[in-house]
Structures are given as C-alpha cells and as structure tokens.
Amino acid sequence: TEAMMVLDLLGTALNLHAEQHVWVIGHTDATPINRSLRRYYQSNWELSAARAAAIMHVLVDQFSVSEQRFTVAGRGDSAPLGANDTPAGREQNRRVEVIIGPEERAW
Image 1 (cartoon, rainbow, N blue to C red):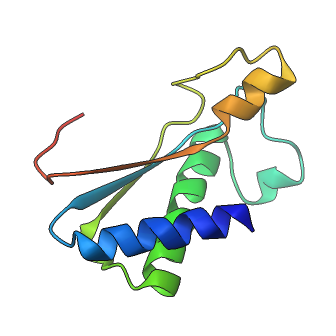
Image 2 (cartoon, rainbow, N blue to C red):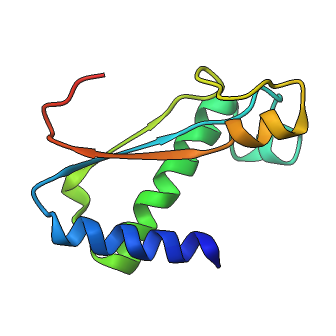
Image 3 (cartoon, rainbow, N blue to C red):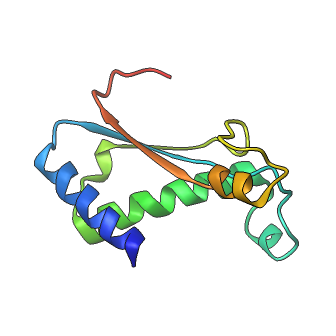
C-alpha cells in the first residue's frame, strides 16, 4: 500500500540518521468514538495514541528502527487542521505526524 511505501522510506531514512529522536503523534477528528470502537478505546485520546503506537510498531518491527528512539503521544481532537463539520476536514484531522530531531526538543 501507499502507506507502507511511505513507512519503508521513513524507516530507511531513520536508520541512516540513527542519532535523531522520533516523535510519533496521533490525532483524531472530533467525532465521538462509535460503539464498536468503544470496546477498545474510551475516547479519541486513546484512539490517537493507538494510531501513533501502531506507526511506531511498524517502524520498529518491520524496519528495525530502535524503539529507544521514540516518543509516542496522542493528541485526540485537540489540534485540528480542518473543520470537523465537513468530511474533508475530518479526514485531515485523522492523521499521524512523525517529527524527527534532537531528543532535547520540547513541546
């Protein structure tokens, strides 16, 4: 898939720059968690953290990036890029950001 191709490129780049820290930050739209997902996630915060963790696990398990390099976080719906009242806006808000830089970087 296209996502796996991107992760393959990212994994390669991360392995070439092993001194860099990696932040993986998950986001959601503002739609409440539906009933079927509530079995796994109580809120959008947990869902966003799970999205970020899933990306980290792919990079660690399939592309051998050291897990010690990661900080994983969920932001829920607190940092939208688009309007949550349109399908296109909600799609923009359901995302995972990967930030690469020195570990000392603070948010």
